[in-house]
Length: 281
Image 1 (cartoon, rainbow, N blue to C red):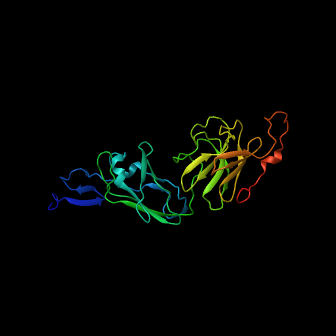
Image 2: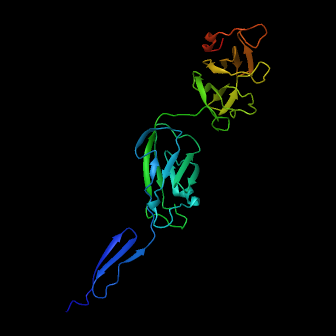
Image 3: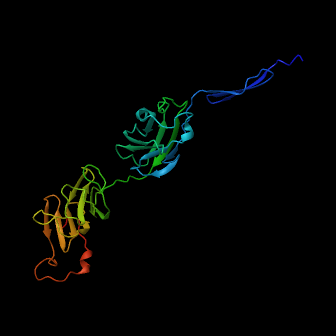
């Protein structure tokens, strides 16, 4: 027939993958040109359009293994420019990447600003271990809520290695007293008991205040801190009542019931409840 040698071909185009499907007497079998492509469509936290996000949040992205036609493992060296977080200005931070879980975590160097919209973007600079880049980036946005600051951290910003409780805060919100089981909030914490600490938000300094009048460690649990309104004095319970002057660095005992004292055999549970006025007087 006149049409016996005519080939009818349909060219299908999908992203960077081309499929030629032909019919005819000398038509080849289907051929696929695997031009490499990368599609960035991660699962992210905070999620798209999330609101009231903590200012202390880390950004987490899970890269679906199907994002790559070839290797699904990212080249970590491309993350510095392959991911950006922008609010009023660009946000600096550090990355961790787990190639097994395909998870990227970005931790900002400083807390985010409250009530602010941020946009995260995976740019076309990101690549997998075979050097393949995406054809287009991926962006999403979220909005922070009120400012949340961790206070149970040491002066280097490292979180305590055990639980903390009973915070009390000065009137200006700058000095926070709390007790903790952690032994890494200050150097040389070796008494293996709960201690009372104060955190100065402005200076970033964490100090232990539950010490003896001679400056040594207390050999008992110290708990239930109460701070004066001006942030100078802290009262705490530690088998008796103690009163610490933060400015002078001096601790005084302000009760007489101490079970370790000679001849004292009783201790009243009512001493768990105490308060301190604005100037500690």
